[in-house]
Image (cartoon, rainbow, N blue to C red; front, top):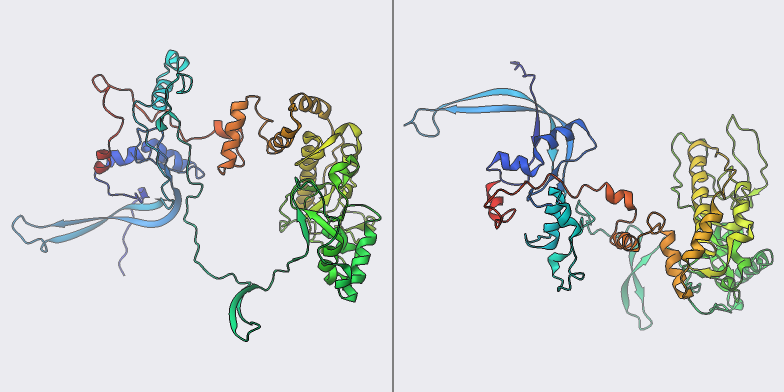
Length: 514
C-alpha cells in the first residue's frame, strides 16, 4: 500500500447553488472574501448568498459552514495536439485538505423587485450616500398627494418564515385508527377514531365576550351512573370553599379511585371560559366572575415554562399523589420542610404538579402577596387579558413567577424577591393616563400591552409596525431586534459613475454571467 503525503494547505469548499462562469461575480454574491473570512472565524455567523448583490432589497439564502474531512485533488491530462481526446497521460496531485464546507440547504425566499425610480430605492441610495437634504425632503406618496404604487412601499424583510422544507411525509397519526362500524341498517362504514383522546362532548365552553354565562348543564345529573353522580356531588361541595378551581386542584381533592369519573362530574357541575382571565378554570353554573372585582384572585395565571428539567436539576418530577397532600422532596443540603402543602399550590420553594395552570389564589409565596392583595392594583372594570388587575401588575406577577419557576427547575431553590411591586405606582399612573376614552377600546389596548407593543416605544406608528410584524410571525420582535437586523447592507451599492444615471442597478442578464 502506497502512501501519499498531504499538503499543509487548507481549503474551504463552497457548494454554490448555481452554474459558476465568473468566479469574481460569484464571490460578490457571497459578500466577498471578507464575508467568507468572517464566517470562518465566527462559527455562529452564516454566509448570505444574494443573487442580486447590488439590490439592497434582495432576500438572501443563508448557509451553514460545517467541518469536513476531504482532500483536494488536481487532475491534469496531457496529450499531443493531434492525438484523440481519449489519449494522453493523467496526473493527479494532492493540493491540500478541505476541512470546511459551506452548504446552502435553505429555500430561496420570495423576491420583491423595486424599480430604480421608486421612492424607496431613491431613499435607500440617499441614505447610503449620506445626502441629508434629500433624506429630510423625502415624502411618502400620501404626503405628496400622489397615487400610491406598489413600489412606493418598502418590501418586508422576509416573506416566508420557513427556510427548510417541512417534512410532511403524509403519515397517519399513530393514535388514529380506522374501524368498521355497523350502521342501524346492517351495513358497515369505515371511520377514523382517536383512541387516546378523551373528549368531554357535554362540557360547556364560552368565550370571554359572551354576554351571559350558562345556568345549567347540557345533561342532567340524574342521567349519569351512580358513581359519576357521587363524584359530581363531591365536586359541587368544593365550590362552597371557593368559586374557581383548576383541573389539578380538583383532581388532587378526589380519591384515586374516583378520578376516572372526573370528566363526567365536571360536565354537569361546571362551565369554562375558552379565553380571558379565567381561561380553562372550572366555574359553577350561574356565576359570572366578570362582574365583581372579588373574583380577581381567582384569575388564571400561567408561567409558560418548559417543565422538562435538566439532567442535573436537583428537583425531581412530582407526579399527582395518591392523596391531596404532596410530600416535598429535598436534597441532601436542604432541611426537611412541611409536607402538608397541596400539589396545586405555588409557595416559591417547590413546584406544583406537572400541571402548569394556577389561579392567583393558589400562589402562597410571601414575595407576591403584596402584588395580589393591594387594592390599588385592582381595577373596577374587567378586561380580556389582565382581568381586574392593571396590565403592568399582571405582567409583573407573571414574569416574577416565571423567574422563580425557572430557578427552581434549574437549581432547586429560588432567590427571594423582596421588592416585587417596586415602581408599580408610577406604571399604573401612566396606564391611567393612556386609558382610551371609549371603554370598548380598553380590551384592545390591554392586549397590546400584554404583548409588549407599547412598553418599548411611545411612537404610535412604530407600535403599529411592531404589531404588524408580530402578526406576520415575528412574535418575539422588539425595537432592539429591528435595529440589529442585517437585511440591509450599507455597502451593497457602489457610487454611480458619471454617464450611468439611467442604467439600472442590475439586469436579469447579469445572472447568466455567474
